Amino acid sequence: MRTATFGTEGPEVGVVGLGCMGMTWAYDLRDRDDEVSVRVIREALDLGVTLIDTADIYGPYNNEEVVGTALAGPYRERAVLATKVGLVPGTDTRVANDGRPEHVRRAIDESLRRLGTDHVDLYQLHRVDPQVPIEETWGALAETVAAGKARRIGLSEVSVEQIRRAQAVHPVASVQSELSLWTRDALAEVLPYTEEQGIAFLPFSPLGRGFLTGRISSVDELPADDFRRTLPRFQQEALAANLALVGKVKEVAARVGATPAQVALAWVLAQGRYVFPIPGTKTPRYLADNAAAAEVVLGAADLAELDALPAPTGGRY
Image (cartoon, rainbow, N blue to C red):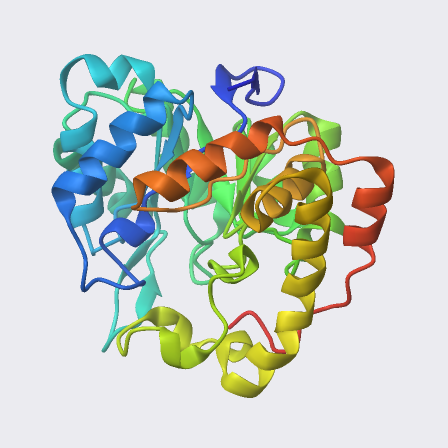
């Protein structure tokens, strides 16, 4: 896979990464198989997919353990390992914020233990805690760099103002936010700012939580406990309307000789020099399909057609 510099001062990474959340959390868990997930992560490294993204809340907590197993021994040095802090289990199936410095200091050690490593390459604030000034939380993340427990630190789902406030404390290496053909909010301000500042941008859900692959045509196809059943865009009426978006993606895919997933990822990759989508999968076949998107070339007409797609029906959450 072709590589690029992770921001102006980061390491070289494969331009397509791997999001590991769905291996143990949120999506169809009937077929959860940790051994297969370990194999998928190691196959990702063989394909040049070197950016491996997890978080302590995924599972909760067991996702880091699966990733740690996969990266044991010689695999660790081949990966650019990213995890996150700042969300904790809440009531029912909900999560809560915890950006207190004491939580960050404790959480990094717990993450390193689960991951089986002495450092992570990227430690990210999963969400800004509205009850804690970002400067305080970010200062605690900066301490993990000073202690050698993290090589660099990043933010997730933040505004430009929040990025600037964090930058005043310690350099921001990356920003992770949702970006796909049906979620383009970051294109207005956040992505242009990160591009200007040389900050890596990590789009999560670049395949629209699997919808843009063209493999979901009805909410009834999702398992009863699948997180997507709670999202407005996956409600049956909205989903039926959104199938028109997938139809256009399929048309472009047929024209360029690629899969819909590859076209969706290629469009995301075309949005900037420092854009590294992290599609999630726990299936070897889909992993290979996603990795191959790095070689898909979309012409100006293809990009213009995709840019012109209407907004989806339904909100993100």
